[in-house]
Image 1 (cartoon, rainbow, N blue to C red):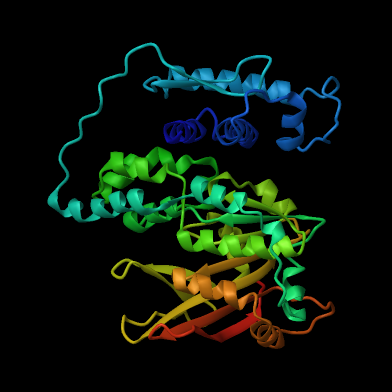
Image 2: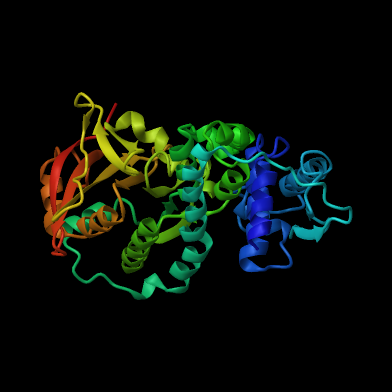
Length: 414
């Protein structure tokens, strides 16, 4: 299963697919249906509705959009496997008359493997982090299965106060889809180790993968290990736990929620839906379009291997976490901004680590905390929360209950 997902990532990142958002979306949807749902047959009307936004009962005889794009996709797949993917041992095909992809073993022998020169001694210290990440990271597919098999709709949040309901009613709605977008731990690790930032457009079309071997080698990393690591679908345990709490809250409000992985998200989704973006702009590049409205940036401390917030609107004031000791400090930020289409809202949640992420979940469900937050913002014309960003400090002593304090809260805007 994992080998097939890695194959899909390589195909999607190829020059034959990544330049066409529609072909990329089509391929990802079809392969997900086969790998996740184990379906053997996918019908044209389903694809037209789910991928191309047609009505559920649209007339496929009068609208051939699926057939046209499927034909193009078949040609591009054939081109990939005869050129860039000539060394692939498994071939991906979409048979005519059925849109369910098929994986088959290639009959010709596999080419000789590339033999890499031994890494210099200075690189060894970095490779253990890649290997540890591969072994210890929480795979998104597995965490998603755990979250979805537990039915959040059966869970109620009895202690919701008026201010808590006020905030979440702007995000979780029964009449609009809300996407909970998990972070991409692998792509964050790649940037941390190489120092090479990845822009959203590169992330979306996977074009950063073309330079991955050379960038990894320049940073003293084994290119093969780096490639294997970044192609894995991994999300942090903290965000997985946070998502589970969100799904409980969504179930209590009968909200329409979709759990999404950052790598599978699209501009179309971010324009049409409400969204909850977890992580920072490195681990979740979908946060990047909203940064012009926000002053907080999350920087990576390579020596300590931690993220910390910097307020760019206040002379780049940094908020470093405390050193290990009796008291443990951390920070999380919360921002509410309009979605890209101006038709809904996006909630952005970033933190210094797992403890701070857990504190953010508790904070956003606590009536007193949100009353304090709302009281620091302009009232505005409406009753809801206006666009804002807030930085919150959390600390605990000797295992005691976490305490939080709002460092600042201000309107979002350019």
